[in-house]
Amino acid sequence: MLRKPIEGYLDIERASKPEKLPVVFTKEETKLILSFLEGTPFLMAGLLYGSGLRLMECVRLRVKDLDFHSRQIIVRDGKGNKDRATMFPDTLIDPLQAHLQRVKAIHNKDLSEGFGRVYLPYALARKYTNAEREWIWQYIFPAKKRSIDPRSDMERRHHISESVLQRAVKRAIINADVTKLGSCHTLRHSFATHLLENGYDIRTVQDLLGHKDLRTTMIYTPLESQKSFMVYQERTNQ
Image 1 (cartoon, helix red, strand yellow):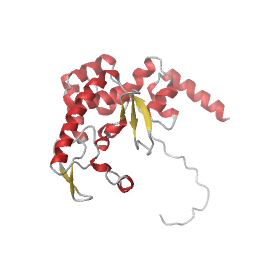
Image 2 (spheres, helix red, strand yellow):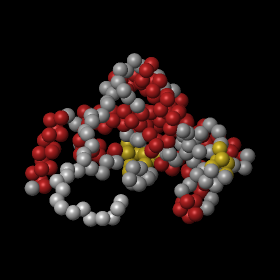
Image 3 (cartoon, helix red, strand yellow):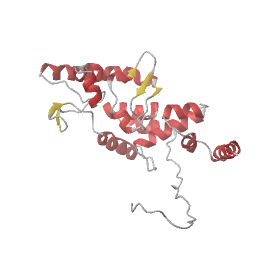
Image 4 (tube, helix red, strand yellow):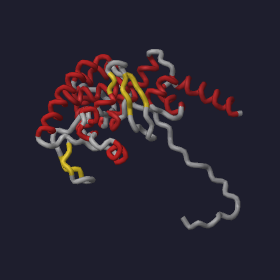
């Protein structure tokens, strides 16, 4: 801050974040929690657990990001502004198709009333001038009401608020009598843990989660595996 060189030798260690184990639901707990959800919150929570999405990645999904034919979901501008592909849970294909039909009816009604625009990042809005009205750019989980976008003063239909899902999942955890301090993100933790328990390769899980460093994914493995990995890393770096 002062832009002055530090004189002398300072034996200072870089502060490190304390390591914390993630809260994980068992498969039975996850199934029970999801059973207490319905409608849009059920679909969104199902994607957090079935695809390993982060909360805001799920909220910001657009129609074009669902690939029903290839059974995959494309996450755009995820953490670190990276794109990635993840799995599409088979159990949600039919419910999501039915959901999209209802959303498209809402979009068509907005268009007939002179609206139907959706927010696009500035570069995309400039490149695709008519895209904001197109169906493929609409949010999969839109808000119930249109609102004024403060960036443009235009009336648009934004995506649903993340707090809607957060509250619904919190209630479901309580109703399911699960005695863990869980949240929406716990469903993502459970996705990774259960994949590893089912024999998935950790590199595959890393790609599905969008982790830059494999060590981040290692928190979902047993402690013995973590120790073995750290020993391997130390030998590799020597």
